[in-house]
Length: 467
Image 1 (cartoon, one colour):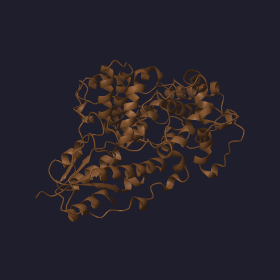
Image 2 (cartoon, one colour):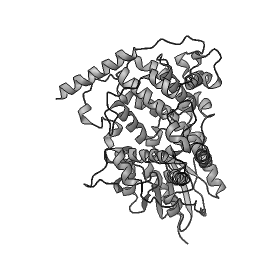
Image 3 (spheres, helix red, strand yellow):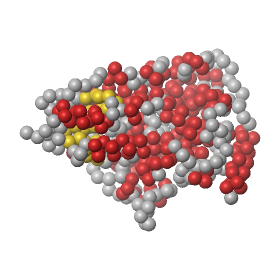
Image 4 (cartoon, helix red, strand yellow):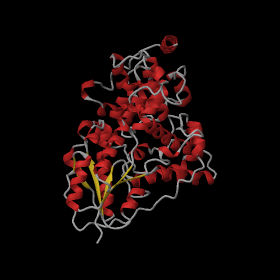
């Protein structure tokens, strides 16, 4: 009889369209494993909570498939070695990750498993090293990257494999004992009402989006007052749905004559582009991608940041976006660009301050997309928005929230009878902030025109100094 294989799950909590799991299940029993290693323990409060509820739902899916999830805690290599010894497993399989922390860990694991460790694709559409420019290098700009991959065959969506059980299951930790929800404190109860957890929920959301909203996606996706986006970011972040499943659905919709589908496909590829850059230029997650921005006079953490975090800048659209994040664990992409621009330009604060706050607060936190998004908006990243493109919250509100629907939905102080979403913010935030819905709404922190002029002056001075 063949010996069992171990499959080490990470950001791939699904059974469908799972190349690595299909490979592991091809001949013999599979032991699904998740490891709470030091790298995972360092997750921020919201993504760690979301991981916990995701693991709970995924464990149920495995049980329904006749399998079970083994939970272990510790250094990944040591845990896997122990499991191999306990179970007699002949191989360990996993899906690749591409951020520098994961790459370092996974290389060590593969080396330490002495030839029985096997990594597989599945987290992105195109492995980062398979997309090259005509000169053989990696892409630094999105549009040429899109043109290079848009007509590639990504292969069929794979059905979930049958998972044969081992003769004896290894012992498992209790998920409750990991206390993954602890850092969220009271916010978990609020955000939990908005999260859509697991593959079944993700596939239903994808179906609804393709049926009802994808046709108008290109024109409506930036409207903050409309439910025009797919809403799949939290599921993609944990691999509860694959990029290839989204890709296949998008192409089907495009061939069915739904014009917005092409722009949806471009957004799926934008995610791939972020991982392409993280793999080839891993410093993007912690340093200015463009070295000529080193020395730019951004402020570090400063007293103005607290008002930005609290959603009390006096700019209703900025504040609505931050409050949406505390209540739902997510933020509309247009709003992310706006709050990032306000922090890095109007408040002249280092993009890393905002990036790290998002790492703590977003249930759809993604290491590649978060880093590239912040650097793109700040002006120091690849394919970046020009520094002089400074989002004006007032004009953005007129264009993307013309009826004040979004602002009033999330900012209680703007309404005489605030709704449940706006009031939920006060239940989600830290008690130490001591904020109440009947408090007066603050005046703007900074004059928008003056803030823009100061940012442009700083940029001009920095360019002169560099020259």
